[in-house]
Length: 386
Image: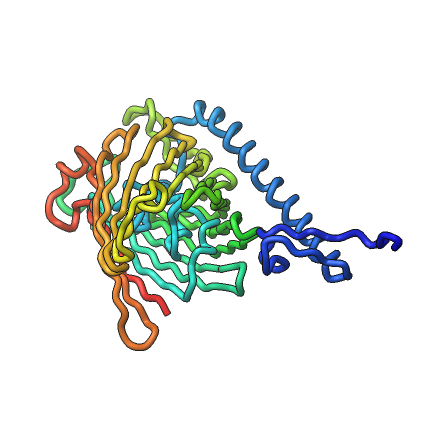
């Protein structure tokens, strides 16, 4: 019998749309089409990983020249409460819509519609609030929308000529930062996901304003080694921040000198590089346990472009997928050190589920100098899933 002139097409298991079994042989146009799709996905995966590795290798060296010189600091504040309770080590363990804060590539882990509202206490009567919504899009993708709003109380206007009258000039001003973002993530294979956020940024201090954009990129890779997951994220990529208008430059001036009106100087966004690992403790160590118990360990190294490298460690214990206890530690920070928190998850009417999370992150001298409960670094989140 003459051998067939048609070549068998072998499709690996990790191609979701063409892999109902471990190995499948196609001898028809559909098989050829699936093979083409696989090759495209594989090339995209390698290109994405190579691009991220280059950025991780090159950009941190540039940060040595920019210590303490970035703007839009609100982008550096951790917002996801579950991650804060785990010491900011959530890049590889984000499982819900909070992935938009830590790693947009992990947004594919959401299974249902989710919304989460977050309130973060800050010193000096500063308020930081956020809301995020995530939606599963087919079998391979997910999208999100999120808003961050930071604002201050009214402050009195004071002048150079008379800086300390009881009521200033009688006028007040305030400052705020506003961020509106959209995100999308997609599974390129059953083990590798790639995602990103696109954000509109606005910052204002009295009549001085800034409008700009930034981009986040993230990946999640399930290694296949039991439950081990690896992740990388690059956050806050974008053009320099430059506020509108001019200011009176009082540096090196006296009352008798002429004061020069000077345009604002530009400053870079606070770009952050994250590299994380996470795994389920019982599965990774092959420990016998009841299905009622779960434990996760996570570690993360991050490098901001205006400071040195840092290491975050965290863990979470879950009981019956209802009660969660969290703790974490941070190394390499000026003031931050330890964190902890808890979470509750319970069903309500129909298919709706309610989640509540609390976290406390110790800020060293900033915590000690803050008076009252509202000024302490407490974080709260209320989430809904359906």
